[in-house]
Length: 153
Image (cartoon, rainbow, N blue to C red; front, side, top):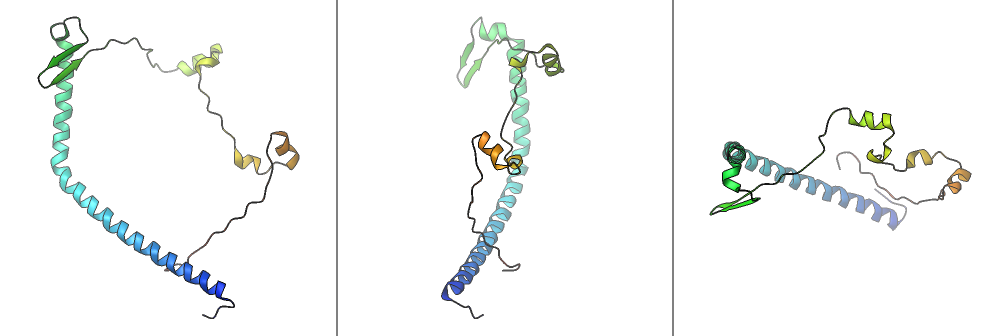
């Protein structure tokens, strides 16, 4: 293709190089993802059963600790063994019950309600300049340079 200036030719060459580099990145990423999926699948056969065994052993240990806490802890919060330690802690926590938010609102206990506030910038885009100035901002021009690749490049 004949370009009117060398700048036009350079811009098209850069687009070609970007497309080629993106294609190479995508090819390598796809290959890596396929290999990772294969390795995960191969090892999942060994890991899945062991993960289940681990959960069962942890559940059994916690149950054993609870059933025999007077013997294992003897009034202390830690019991050390050859292969590790057992820890006991008694905490007073607020029970997370259903309907608490509604009751907090009914009684006006706003100090216990989280409200996440943020600026709706999309809404401000449609505001007139006077209103923007009133809240401490303004509309400015911003240059943007983007590019688009042809399909199949």
